[in-house]
Length: 380
Image 1 (cartoon, rainbow, N blue to C red):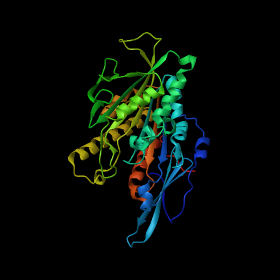
Image 2: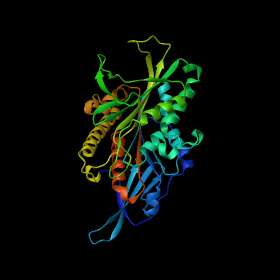
Image 3: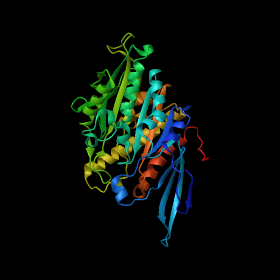
Image 4: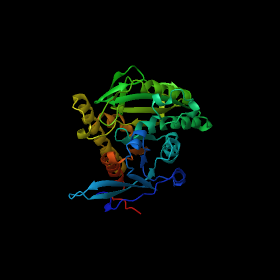
């Protein structure tokens, strides 16, 4: 059994507006928050007269999948999913951030280890959500007019928090690395290969990872731009500029007043932002290139391991299988320990041609969420 489905005639669906998004309650009891974001139709889809099949209604997501019967009669199968929040194409990055991610930033100042990641099919808007528009789209645009990604919005809040006299003793350090085909590469140090090892205290340490001290949000933006220039992208059947690696931006708050251990300042809190590689089925890559298929296999393996870790984290199992992939291994301290928070943003495309991918994304996110209390949520 899964989320509810029904075959219905063609019909419209109510979409959640930006105003409604900001009016929803923000309190989270769980350590895991799962939200869905639908991107707007792009110019190519509008010109091809693609049909919008995804509707966001409060915290529910409804997918109306067009199908054909054996006798070629057209019908629509309706799939219903329930999440913590759902955001339609009118909701901006700022509104998404305020609703889903800001509580995690507040928790970092309280000493928490937080993780925020975007998941979805290639071309569904993950990188736009996390990083903002691609560099090509913002050439000649003033910084004040740029659409900020969640990275930058979080950075502004972190530096605003440091202005508070209670947190004046904290400093912010940033590391940016990628995981490509099971290997770690430092994006701030000419793609140097890194090793993840466990120390005597069973903490995972990334040997040789370059951490930069940043004084303000502008410094952080320059660090992100430097890292993005080194990131691995590739051409797939779904996207000409597809992220083929998991990019991890790690922002650490260090306590400069506390006595240092091992020559390093004491860590006060940490948040990791992850732009996951595009998920897609091997049959859909339309590519016989061996490297592209190996990329896809490694991506799928790490996504499966990530789901198992989140599941164990939220059910508070004794064992968390973080060694299942390099991605979960380096994020170990975000999965074990009582003071952890995880925010998952599932990105979906609205058009009918990508409906299978959208359903796969929603089912993945739903499985992660449904195990929270051991019972399946019911639609209102």
